[in-house]
Each structure stands twice: as structure tokens, then as C-alpha cells.
Image (cartoon, rainbow, N blue to C red; front, side, top):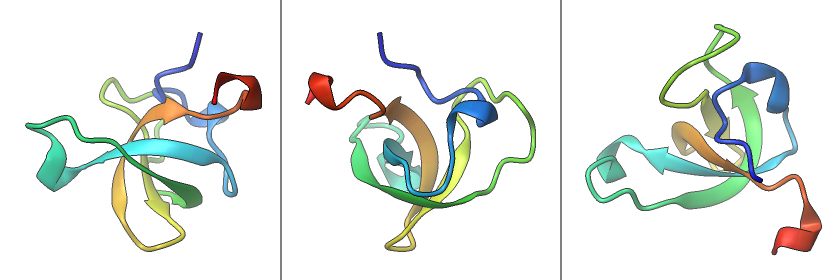
Length: 71
């Protein structure tokens, strides 16, 4: 089972994740990229930890791609 990205301890720079951008919250469109920075300081956030991707996009983590066998 994939984590939902609600726990800060599961997310780190260099991890490939799927995020929801603010503009895509209604549609639920997922954007994939590599984590550059963690922006949420809390250990847990119910809607997902906010991150900045290497390309500069900011959103909340919805999918953790930690298992290459799931691709």
C-alpha cells in the first residue's frame, strides 16, 4: 500500500512524489516530480505534507513513489 504523504518522516529531498497543486485541488490532478524542500514543519498534516518540487512547483503530497515495483 502506498502512503498518502501525511507524515513528514516519510518525505525527504530527492524522493519522487505525486502532489496536488493548489489550482488542481478541485479536479484532483496529480503532478509528479522530485522533492526539493519540505514546506510543512508539522510532523503530520491531514491533507498532505506541502513540498516544493525541483521544478519549483508547490503542492501537497498525495502519492509516495518509494517502491519501484509499483510503477
